Length: 519
Ligand code: AHR
Image (cartoon, rainbow, N blue to C red):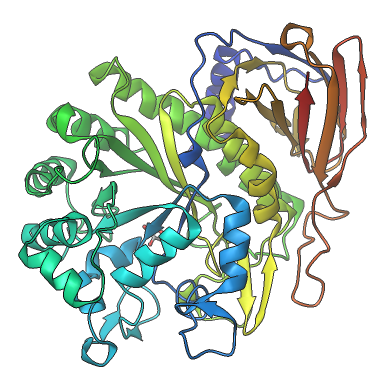
């Protein structure tokens, strides 16, 4: 754990290198940089993650086709509708830690023949394998989203993963495509995104990076690229937080033509042995969570610097396939199920991290919020037939305008958010311009008390009209409940002036704002 002094110094260096300083001011001017050379923000930054964990799949997504809850092939229609609205670009499955215990052949074929296993990582519950490969890949088709499958490296075999690729992707006649047809599916699903294990340094097998890199090379050698246009997109299990050596060894020991992405996991958790309450938290805990959330910036900069050393042409992508807030489970719930409520604090984490990913769109090409339904920083919570959308859902929905748009680089001096002598940048922002010429800027003010103001000169972009949306609430701890599901939702925002091409926006405390500019 870094000391405050170290953190402040690192942050100071980092933000000054980005043109952002920590000077005290409540009014900031945002400068627009050169758009010509700017990267496109990959839509896959807005990806999601669904693990066989707690009530994410069972009682979350999947209620079975005999349920009274309206469903499509057993998946709740209200969840399908909500995720379609979000335009989720990809969905990672079946884990997480669960992935390295999962044998995909247990989850195909007639239900009554499927074996049960014990979900050893998450609550020791019995997994009946009723939601398997067909259920997941058919769901992805319904959602019009790309599946991202995590292969079992920890307790699986090379043959098992090679077979899974053949089962999902092979068009012609083969042992696995014949089996797929026997199970009712003629056409392959054509799965492009594959994770080669998960957290190989921990629950995925407690490996050293050198050992994992060798294993990675062996596994991918036998995964056939043939049936997917442009080949499979293979993602190596990546570092935890600031384990820079992990990234260094992978970049050094895996040939570039066998590697499309290297993962990184970082949760905004304040202390693994005392994570704090999901809803009943003080400003002290809020500030600490924000500090952990800001760390994502430093982690991406440092992992990217290592990747640049081995891959100047940026052929290998950084994939943040687990991120989000992590607290103690909601009172009275199973500690192994990781169910937590979602407050305005989570809206701050979401808005900030998505801004960070957008601003690093040259290297960060995919990210997956953990997790979609009923687990950790969920976008959807369910209780029997009831379903609610969380503040995080609303942030993701407001930000979807950035998907596949061209980044507009920004630089500015953020005022401080100061708490008991410690300071963090209060404001973070990102902007993009889409194919239709619409500009979007997303701005977050994490200060728990102070409003801040930013000005942006938009004359260079020829913007003539501005509209806006805001997500805010009275208290940081506010959240949506099954009895009051719409307490927090985006509202039209008019707290700005736009004169002679110069936009001045007032940012209320702990708010997320997305503005749209048109010509
Ligand atoms: O998202 C919950 C767990 O966090 C995942 O299973 C694991 O990869 C990580 O440690």
